[in-house]
Image (cartoon, rainbow, N blue to C red):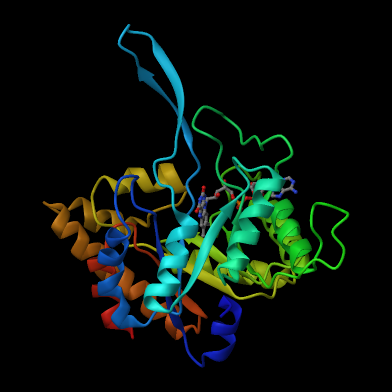
Length: 317
Ligand code: FAD
């Protein structure tokens, strides 16, 4: 079932989770071990992130280096199919522009449709590790908007090969990303919002936000979207802080602020177990307030911490 139908059919806030594919070399059981404890909360859907390959230098016996492409976390599509098969829960694969030509994207979409996966979250992806700015593949999509248009075309039976007539229409429900604290490359929030508007005008069904730790940022973001005429559901993305290191890693990686009240409490902690307790309480409060405000979904980034998420969700359902 489509994410948008889950939202429409539910009278109250639903729960969803996001997971990462395991590092290459692990089995699908590592995903089940991660998800099993979360199943008691009956998530409406589970997102699976996509990780592009990166170039690394491997030292050879003669002391010189070989540049090789490595994909550390493959398996997004397979994991989605496994989740749907194993748990009978809808899976949402993330699909990115980076590293894909339009032909490869089309083939991936056809695979997804054949597997009965009718949700995708379309994203640009970040620049490759060896690039300063994002560069699409030759004949690839440059912006999430372009990728979205490709999915919308396929939903209308329009394939890249112009000689395909009456091509079957895919049924993808399309999510996009939103940044309550602005995308880091955007000159300002208003410009960023204009691009979001272009995506919803082009057919995006809903927005999932970047993590945030201050609900005010989410509420202001929703208001700015509504003022611009963006009227699709806006799903808050939520993550617990579980270590002191994250106080600097999260702002650097995700370009989000950590409120003073939270960072002050975390800095007082002696161990990361204490930090996880503070992070859990903070996220419970955030979730309660968002639920009270009637958000459509509480979407949790589990990022290897299912037990913390369990402690949060137990308190709010
Ligand atoms: P875009 O919408 O293309 O925007 C990128 C930048 O370009 C923005 O600054 C925007 O303002 C600007 N822009 C947009 N359209 C135009 C235009 N037409 N002309 C000029 N400028 C424009 N990354 C992954 O690699 N894998 C994942 O699984 C993944 N999952 C994510 C899930 C969520 C919920 C979120 C919020 C992010 C996720 N990301 C993921 C990260 C995301 O790929 C990066 O943040 C990326 O830098 C931007 O993606 P986007 O889809 O927002 O890009």
